[in-house]
Image (tube, rainbow, N blue to C red; front, side, top):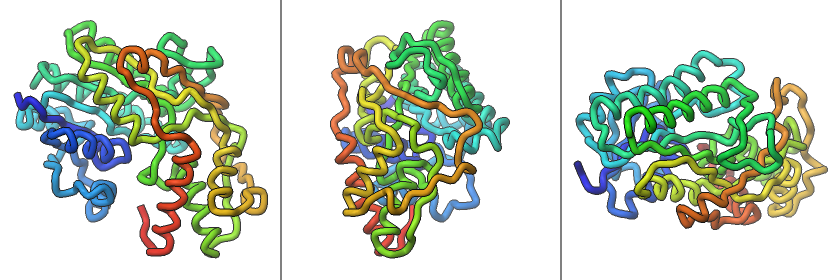
Length: 329
């Protein structure tokens, strides 16, 4: 076993890219699972943006193919396995519920099973989601708050979450879950609302567009920076005992308020440009998510470092530069 070797599924996504960068800075040998894709020529765009594309060893594999996972685990023999791969866009999970279940739910269990069979010494991290709280049962959500998923995505994540607990208790795996609340960055996919907003702000500021269509402006989320949150993932796997942790800022903000921050940073008024399109509303909405990160602070020594204002400003500035250069991510 390499003392500092990690395998990341979803390494080309927002969280995977930031985690890979974080681990490389700490001397890790980093490996990533790469799904065959029609967009193979741009799949490593986030890794290139962080300047680490050539520093990671990529392996062909797929969460839905247990044999490929066992093969990669046997080849890499990592000390730490981070399962970040998923069909992660909530809205799409209603259009593709079976795919979401197969990848986001069963895919996580395939990774757990591969670890159990091929290399049970590895420590395992599962990317759970605040969306599992859904129709919230408590105004502020902690590790003890009951779950009530409101989308196929959330239901799939909940299955993966409980199976992680089950493998920990049944087979003695060092398996932990991070119940991450919304975390954003300039590497966020354009389909997610925060990035849609900051990209829209950039386009309007540069005269490329006049309006920005959004759905539910009243939805409230606990938004942090993905760069901060990957540190919490790593800290979980450094503990003597595995456990589950809420990772959040402890501050909740509406989509409307995030818009005000983003437009205000560019010297614009959101009221002049934002229009509501009911076609963008979810079939079942999650109205409020507000995390309690007390356990992560106490046991991991972790706390969010980037303010929402700084996050929105960073995203707007990067999207302004991208639009000026006609670059897209």
